[in-house]
Amino acid sequence: MKLPIKSSLLLLLALSFTFFTISPAYASDIRSIQAVEENSEQANILSTNSDAVSETYNNLLQAITHLEDKAYFPSDEISYKELSPILNDVLADHPEIFYFQHEGTLVYSNGEIKLNYKYPKAEIKDKIQKLDLKANEIIKQTIKQDYSDYEKVKAVHDYIVLNTSYDWDNYQTDTIPETSYTSYGLLINEIAVCDGYAKAMKLILEKVGVETHYVTGYGKEELHAWNLVNIDGEYFYVDATWDDPVPDREGQIAYNYFLVPASYLKKDHSWDDKSFPAATSNKYAFFQEFYSAEETEKYFYYSNLNDNYKLYRISKDGNGKAKVFDARAPYFALTSDSIYFSNYSNGGYLYKANLDGSELKQLNQVLSIDLYIEKNILFYTNKATGITEKLIIQVNPLEEKLNKFKNFKEFSNVKPNKKWTVTFNLELNESSINKNNIYVLDENGELVSAIPELSENKKQIYVQPPAELYQKGKTYYLFLENILSYKGKSLKEPTRIKFTIEQ
Image 1 (spheres, rainbow, N blue to C red):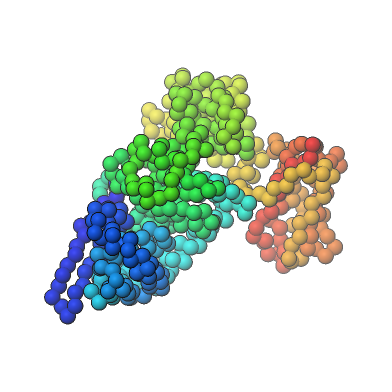
Image 2: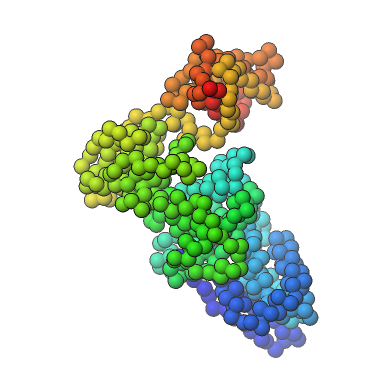
């Protein structure tokens, strides 16, 4: 997507010493990197003064993150012309710096840099705290402690696509606000252009230990930004902006530009790929078949771009690819046991089928698009009228719980007579220890007759197995919620345990 650039100014004024303005921040690193590439003399200066460049980089980073008014560079070792690319490197490496203002920032020939900011310092501190809290909240909501780097990247990619929107209206009228170029704009305002998407991806992923690069160049001949990530020692490109439907579609994620090699991305992106680690692996190429996709515990279900949008499923490790049915299904939504889809092999009418593709049943005679499910309601848009319509459906009680509580502690090879013990720091209110608050559901959402008990010291809850014990090879879910302390205070974090019984 387009990233507008304001004209750069370099001014020489007749004062006691000379000062120069820094290039503006709009598409900041794009402009500055190009300038260095085009000026071989300047590029040589950068390469032969690495210590001075590093010193300047660190001085700028320290001064900006501490909201200081001035920074310094060794003017006897590097040229003022190098300040713009160095500063842009700082900003590209640190997407949490959303508050710096290029306009009004001055570079003096004596080595002094007068820094400028977009907001008053008190407001900046408040915004920094707000952004950090939001990033940490997203991490807590989407990422488990034992997640692999692949799972972390997917979780952040999916969160951003599902919970934010491209600033399409302002893009069309060329009125994009400054915040839409920042991580703050995307995560707090939930709207941005590609710059904001790429910076937000980098901000969150680096917080959870995934090496992430901010990449700029061109997408379909317009200035654009995206990311490069390191997963298990291999590099892959991710363009979350182009995976987010425009206009925004509720519940829809694309994966056309998720974990792709450089060779794939080059079909419609261009950039200085030699400046980044090589990305050559096709390990996740199966994602590029996805037009739209949903996932269950074991599978991705997807509308296959390479087979006329017919519905397929594939194991989450990329194996076992199989066609579910032969109908074209560009729009679909899943429950725990059913597929609802727009049957483009029959007028785009709404259909229902089992997860294995059997028992197809027509539900209406309306061209239905943009399907999604909330609780026990299927929403779809009537293409002819543009009106969102809804259909009441039967939803497995377990599915409602899984949608509400995405993260579980997981255990495998559990004994059929397993007795669970959950320990709390405070004494518990005995009235809250009951089967409404503490219960076990099986894979079908059926209630299992497990029995909760409170220990003598009132700090532990025991969950006894059912009289007939748990069935071998089956998976169960233990829920503990609405538990009260002895003072009647609600304990904030409900406990969710997923466990599979040994064979």
